[in-house]
Image (cartoon, rainbow, N blue to C red):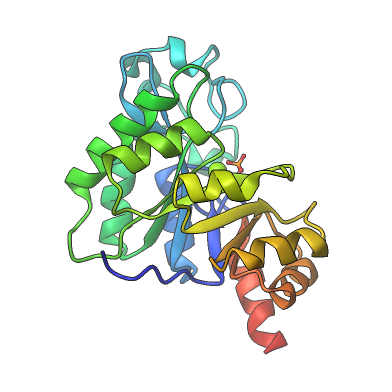
Length: 249
Ligand code: G3P
Ligand code: MG
């Protein structure tokens, strides 16, 4: 496995301040800004097609409604996933994982694939995602970082593709985080940077693996976290954070 080199700024859901989140337009927006890596959320349709989508329900980010896990891909591909964000994005679709990875590969981006299972589908979401992604991803490119809030999904990811690095997502501090991280051999700890305390950070640093923080849109906060030892931040406006960080140094 090539060495994991994580940039200081990762585009969150593409670059969600500038284009509808988790769409191909959002991935292109990040690439156009010169951002090196994007984070995208992967879940399954009812008929097990891996798509890029954050919510369990379709309402917020499409012109449809209902639950993703109860909707077949045939209906999902009919939806508009851009109009809610702005008229100029009309016609944007919910991408399949395959569509998204092909753009990511074409644009020379790195990627953090967040496994975002609908409840009860933790294992199959990890398995299907990795089955598709490992077939598409070039052998000579640095591997994707595979992350999840679901420990079950991360265990499955380790079973299916141990060589691809895993990021353990932690929203609220859990005292036994280290035991969990060691169990799935976490390569990164991905924490909520907006609630992180300095003491918690010191604990995470003791694990001696990169700590990544989401979702940081305030350059001052980014600078503070980097000064604490955070290796990188996820941002909706990654260019703003990148440019500010360059000025700080
Ligand atoms: O992976 C970082 C971040 O995306 C986790 O939270 O809810 O935005 O997927 P969420
Ligand atoms: Mg995410």
